[in-house]
Image (cartoon, rainbow, N blue to C red; front, top):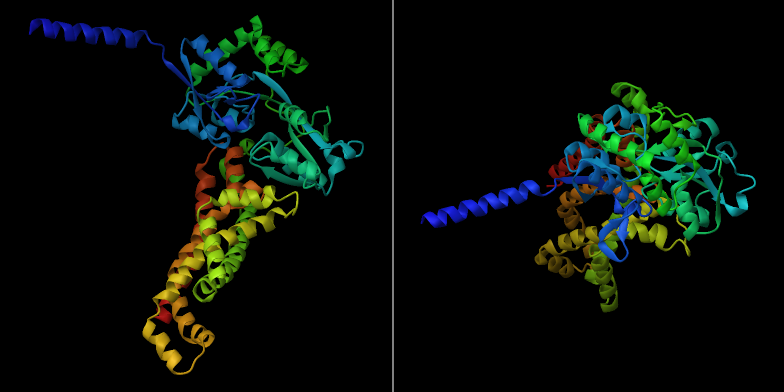
Amino acid sequence: MFRLVAAIVMISGGAATLLAQSPAIFRWAGDAEGGAPYVEADPSDPSRVVGFDVEVAELIAKGLGREPRFVEVAFTSIDQSIVRGDADIGLSGIEDTPARRAGYAVTLPYYQFREVLSVRSADAGQLRTLADLRGRRVGTLSGTIAYEILLAAERDHGIVAVSYDDDVHPYSDLLIGRLDAVLLDNVLADRRSRTAPGFVTHPEPVAVSHYVGVLAPGNEVLRDRINGILLDAMKDGRLEAIYKKWKIWNDDQRQLFAQALGGESIAPVTGYKTDSAAALSKWDATRRYLPSLFRAAVITLVLSCGAMLIAVALGVGIATGRLYGGRLARMALTGYVELIRGTPLLLQLFVLYYGIAAAVRLPAFVASLLGLALNYAAYESEIYRGALLAVPVGQLEAARTLGLSEFQTLRLVRGPQAFRLALAPMTNDFVALLKDSSLVSVLTVVELTKQTQIFATNLGSWAIPGAVCAMLYLAMSLPLAGLARRLERRWQ
């Protein structure tokens, strides 16, 4: 017994020693969807990620004596994820903005980039600056410095700012004529020019900023250790070697390194002036953003009402066709319903806007309206079909005995009763559609949720924008629910 206890103690002690000797984990957040040269899945081993930010994270982890571990987080959620404690630092081409400096522990800038303007090759001679693009559509990533610049340029030069959730579709839309220009980082523009010829990027910068690592507020001790590691890597050439490997080294980095090593103060953004929300108090920023939130709420409401009206009409037709149509019609309509219900709404929106663009180039709002309507029509048809089948058979037989035709029976007897039965689930579907309309932001439609996300990113906090967004959604959905309950009582 004594030997057994001694063995257990020895094993436990050995395990504790191994645990103490194993390096701590350095968790860093990034978005592999952003692609090279930042973070992307390794083509030879998709379980790994590669990119220059991956190597910067590994460099930092080695300096800290820790083991790096990648945490996949959507780019727009990295800041909030860091605050939650999902990772120690965010590194994924994260821009140095006044909002981040005010609300987070931000590292020193480790890469300098230029906001550059890309136009179709045929337009390169006449479209060189934002002032040349008056009345034209210019695309960029939402929630970025470039988007803030375009919003300011809307006021100053009368351009139309178009926001995207990724950096691929702005350039593809530029090539097919949906956009007249794209404003993005030179790193992104250079990468796209190698895979999608047909556009020219002007070398003159509209603005200059930097990539930084973002840590949770209050984590300044770790931030300062990381800054020391980055400065050492600038001094001994390790960062330069990483950038040269990924073909992003240029004279801008020599200038940045000299400033950082010399202890100079580095401004977050230089060049085109923007009205940053971070420079205002939260309440002043909220007052400034309220008009844009109200406009986005109107877009959400119009889009939802229009899509629901089309969905109801199509749903009634589909349900009627499945009950009264011939065999081929029933098979075709059933196939449509199962196809729509079996595939994601997001995929359907992408197909309508991007997938068929070579044949039919739908405007973003029209594609959004059709996508929501066609999707919800399938679900509405099942509600109406169930309601039609719920009407007692005895009433249908009585109608036929009275000499009513099938159409008259449907219009005068079956339809009105089915509509009353379908009212409650119809209302529920409309409220769901109101919220699902947030998905159309992937097609460049800036509805309420998208505008709230932009506001929150620029403010550096989700608390106030989230509360305002929730109140606006409730203001739109509660009256509808009240109207439905009133109609139910009246028709009961």
